[in-house]
Amino acid sequence: MPAIEMTAPLIIAIVVAIAGVVLAIYAVVRAQRRKPSTGVEYMVGKEAVVRSALDPTGTVLAEGELWTATAEGSKIEAGEEVIITGVEGLKLRVKEKSKGKERE
Image (tube, rainbow, N blue to C red):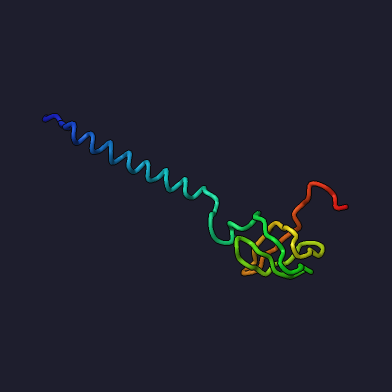
């Protein structure tokens, strides 16, 4: 029965191919676990500035764009900072940014 011989270049080629497949799988898994960096999912949790009073609907400036927004809770005046809590189509849901101190 003849013995199977493998040359060094063949072994190196197989090792390199397997390493390439493992690295590709690692890159795909890592990309799937990463948080969104674009789109509406990215905006949740970001800050925005109220442009026209939210009572409960108005406009906010978020990520350099004007958006229609609905306030969760009481009226929010123009110039106040808010946090984006959700996105429904082309409308943002926002809440007033909590302040470190109570208003005086």
